[in-house]
Each structure stands twice: as C-alpha cells, then as structure tokens.
Length: 234
Length: 250
Image 1 (tube, each protein chain N blue to C red):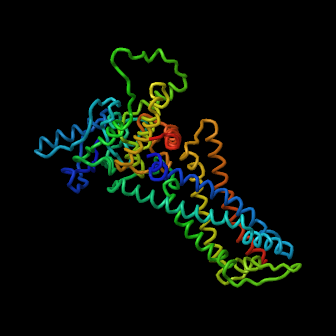
Image 2 (spheres, each protein chain N blue to C red):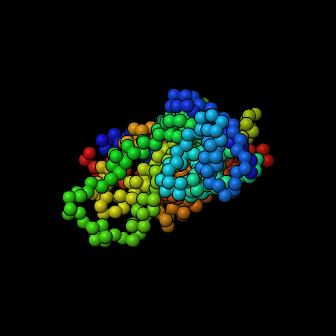
Image 3 (spheres, each protein chain N blue to C red):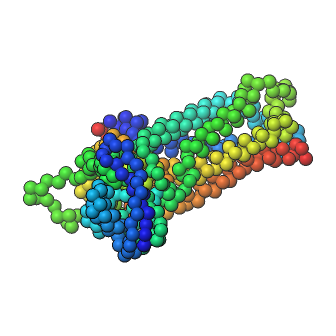
C-alpha cells in the first residue's frame, strides 16, 4: 500500500504539487538572474554578453537536462493541479446558494487553479515567442573569433521595442506576472505546509520570505519588457 | 425583532430540494439560534405544516450536531462557536438569514438541514483508536511521563467534536482538519505511538475513499472551527503520512 500511497493518495498529490512548485521557484531565480542584463544600457557589450549566455543555455548539456526537468515539472505541476481540482469539484456536487468565503480565506488562496491556468497560457506564449524562435526560428547570426552566435538580444529588443504589437506583448507579459505573483503569495508558504514543514518559529519567517518573493520576482520580470521598450524608443 | 428566513427544504436524500421563505416575529435577542428555529417549527406544526428538520443534541457546544450553514458561514458569523451557541442578538430587525445544510458529497442530505456524517465514524473506525487490552492489567495513564507541550497539543487536538464545519467550510469539502486532529491527538501520546504508522495510512485511505476533497491550505477550516483546531495538526498529519508511507511495510 505504501507504494500506491505515494502516488495516488490525496496527500501524495499535494507532496508532488509542493516539490514541483518549490523546484519551479528555484527555476524562477535562475531565469530572472539570466535575464536581468536585458535591462542594462543598450550597447555591444550587453548584447554580446546576453548572446553568450543564450548560447551557453542552449548548448550546455547539463543545462539541457535541467531545461527538460523544468518542462516536466511544469507539466507535472499542471496535470496534478487539474487532477486535484477535478477531485475537489466532485467532493462538492451541490454548491451553496450563499457563501461568504471571504470571511475565512483570501481570494487568491482559493484561485490557485485559475491563476495557474493563466500562468500556463503565459508560459506557452512565452515559449513560442523566444524558445521556439531560438531553437527553430531564423535568428540572424554573427561571428566573434570564429565562433558563431545567434543574435537573440536584437530579437528581444525588436520584440518589446519596435514590434508593431509591442504594447500588446508587454501587456500580456505584465498580466502573466500578476497571475504569477498571486499564485506565489499563496503557493510559496503552502508548499512548506503540504510536506509538513510547519514550525512556530520558522513558519512566520517562511511566510514573510514567500510574500516578498511573490512580489519582488514577478515585479522585476514585468519590468524587463517595460524597461526595454523605454530604452529602445527613448 | 422580525426576521426573514430562507431555509433549505429537501424531502429526502433523492429530492432535489429548494430554498423556502419563512417569516418569524417577536424574536428575542436573548434567544439562541436553535430556539428561534424551535419557535418557527412550533408555528409550522400549529399550521399543520411539516416542521424544518435540523440536527441538535446537547445545545451547549460540545456534541457537534447542530450543523448549519448560516448566511454563507458554518455555524453563522461568530467565531469559535457552534450553532446552538449563536444568539439572535447577532442579527438585526428585518434581516434575511439563509440557512443551508453542510454541502459535501461525503455528507449526503438526509432531510432539510440534516446531513449524514457517518463518514467521520468510518474514518475513526479505520484507525482513530488505540488497541488497549482492558483485561485488568492496564497501565494507569498518569503513570506514563508525558512532555507538557505534547500533552497540551494532544489535548487541543482532542477537543475536536467532529461537527464537520471544516468540511462544510472548505471549498474542496476536505476533511483534513478533522482527520489530522484525530491523528495528532494519538500520535503525540505514548499510548498512540505504537500504531501511529498504520493509523495515519488507514485513516487517510478511508478519508479518500469516502470522497472528501484535497487540502488547498486556504486555512478556512481553522477560522470556522468551533474548537479552534489549528492547521499545525494538518502539517503534523502530512509529516506522519510521509514518514509512514516511506517506512511502513504495509
């Protein structure tokens, strides 16, 4: 039974939700660190630095493995979320006529599924915009000391700066980050609770760190396209 | 005061049910909520109508029978009380009060506001006990040294009256607060430690089988619980279950 217990039971689904969620939080830190240079002053050094980073990310075998683990974690987290939601809906077939849920819980703690769906849609759009473009698109190349680099930097600058739909893309990216922020405000501390990591002394600290993380990280992500647009056009 | 009531009426488990409107007059602010419903039922009986079926027993907040979802909250708007401890001074003249039964697939409606909560009993039967030989050589509980903090936490968990407000309140109709309180009160004490692994595995398995939902950690259950059972218990159950599923040979 203990085998099936770690896969099928209600608690096991929450353990997987928690583990994949915490892993994706780590991914966010790495992803943010790699993309912050996009906000630097536009010049050849920034551009080449970023393109070197992009080349490393798309060619290093270890990074490739981690990239696939991230994709699997996202899918696992999403599918697990859908399964949990389906079970939860089945557990209450008749709804209340009057329900004052705000009296006892926050709206975003109850909206993990809708926020998750928005984030998933955002990830799909984001992958089509850049990941697919980098791997399968036609990106202009240039050579430095015999090595060929794809100029992803210029593609990003055009996309958020000069593209005729730039404002629409920026809005979508901001919306995606708002959804991520609300998902994280509840999700960060919830991931610790789900695996039983709760402590009178440490839980309040985890909650504060989670709150700060949930606001600061999506905020910086959202600032990247805005800063690019201003720099390119200003 | 005069109040407008919208009460869920359902003839039996297979009836689809509907909200019906009633008016009660001369309600005293000193009355309890159940006394107000008693008056309504007396009026209905005198008019030759079917009284509203609702569960109640001790009327002093310890039996956990008076399951009612009042104006969108389990046991009404006040904290840390059951419906029988809710008083009419909490309402104003002319208020409309909507009263619904607990809503959960695992708690089917029997009639009107009465639901079947025997799913909780079956979870207890699956492991919420200690197997003690009572043939005369039982060790006196006071002879076992127990850490004060553990004794206090176990006692706090044991105050759960199994009313089902946690299930009723949870957006997922999850029974985690109830089950975790029962797992905790035994896991914390030496008498319960012997069977702690099978207990948590069996009780969670039963809970899933009964069709309760999953925990989203919204914390609504803790807020609405009449006995203020803490989310600490759910975390403890999560730990117990993780350890048990990794190490139990069952």
